[in-house]
Picture 1 (cartoon, rainbow, N blue to C red):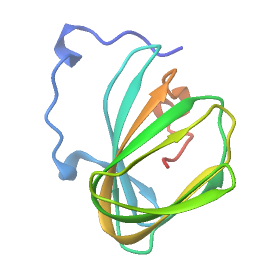
Picture 2 (picture 1 turned 30 degrees about the vertical axis):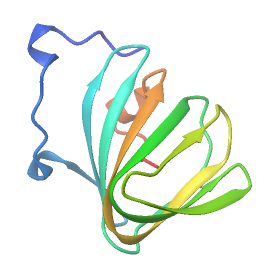
Picture 3 (picture 1 turned 180 degrees about the vertical axis):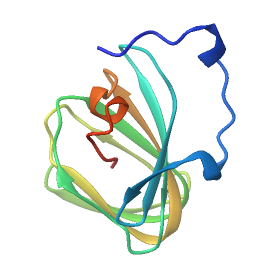
Amino acid sequence: MPATPNQSDLFMNSPASDAEDIGNGMRRKILGYDNNLMLVKVWFEKGAVGPVHAHPHTQTAYVVEGKFEVFVDGETQVLEAGGCFFVPSGAGHGAVCLEAGILLDIFSPAREDFLNDEGYSS
C-alpha cells in the first residue's frame, strides 16, 4: 500500500504546469493521499475520453469546470461545473469531455497504480 505522507506532504499548491501528462488529452496531479484516501486533479482537453473501465476502489468525482458526458454502471448523464458522480467499487464508468474542464477525483482506498504510474484517471 502507499506510504502515509510525511509532514512536508500535508500542504500542496497545484499549478497545472506540474501535472503529469497521461495521454489522450488528459493531465493529472495527485494532491494528497494516504492508504485510505486519495485526491487527484485531472485536466481534460475538449474531446478527451476516459474509456469505460472498472476498479476495486470507490470513487467520487466533482466537476470543477467544463462539461462531461459521464457513464456509470449503465447510466449516462451530462454534468457541468458543480456536478458530481459516484462510482461504486467494481462499477464500469468513463467520461467524454464535451468542453475543456477539470475533475477532482477522490478514491478509497488510494490508487497504488497511480503512484506506480500504471493507471489513468476517470
